[in-house]
Length: 401
Ligand code: GCO
Ligand code: MG
Image 1 (cartoon, rainbow, N blue to C red):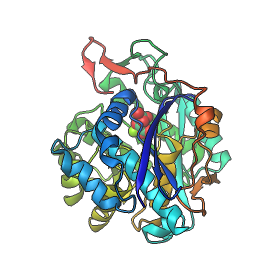
Image 2: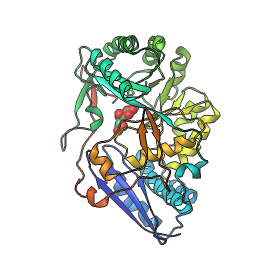
Image 3: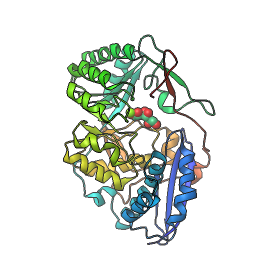
Image 4: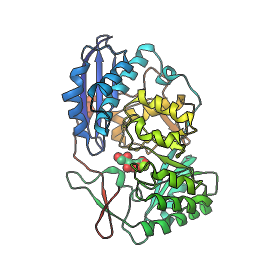
């Protein structure tokens, strides 16, 4: 089965998405997600100018060889732009292979290891009371696991607390600037979780995202202070570049640690997994280079008692979510799947067979990954430049976001 054409689509049904569509001489097509929030067009150029010409005439069935050809064959390896571009192609090829086999993707990966995937939703509030209420609303909707973020006294709204941070910045404007104080945050976070446990008890799993803002010793202290509230995980406690820093965190706290949403190859996670410095690896199909490397990463993690917890914010398209759901349905060491939902417009452009009910995700059982792309509708939502926010300390120093 030969690849006859590859098209790249950029659309913005609520936010920007990059979609790869591969056509074959047997009439089968497949689609993949190649979205890199805030740097979408760089991936489009990488695909159109450099990868698409390499694909025409290749055997669509040779997924592994194509992945190696694009990764090793480039000489210049790794990086978020490269890996998102390769991921879009890889997902589309797995979609084609599963359609050709007449199977849902999870069957090709090894078959179901479970009946449903626990997912976590996002609770947020300007202050503790609002966050506590937001957790309650998610519990009422059936969620068994909730990520909790709240505003910090003395600071304007921070990441994850006002519902706008993950939507990028205003159209065609400069990135929104946030303000950060580590000492204010460290005093506040334990109070937030104390209040949530007091209001909602111990049956709900609680998660928290620090968004790379602490140093290792600060993260160690936070982990310790949060121990009484038994978190499911503490995410991105330090900048992901600080691999050795995780040793220090590990030595000081039993709070489970998650990291990896910004990783793009297995090499970013090697030390953390081999030394069991983390409990959950957050790598996701689109930013890790596709389904082919995600299988290897998951198996490598499984050898070291690390479970999966794939990044699933709304800035990855439903194709990425569906790929993660199929992977999670198969992978023996599944932990949890992030799920932040999609706008109605997004779901109309990317209709899919996956579903969410009672705090769990389910894959579609038809052939492929089960997500379609409505090209005509997508044309009504042209690309809109948008940035993630940036973050500064109170004295103006640029800080991690
Ligand atoms: C999460 C993430 C997101 C990211 C966003 C970046 O845990 O869901 O931290 O909020 O910031 O996906 O594009
Ligand atoms: Mg995160």
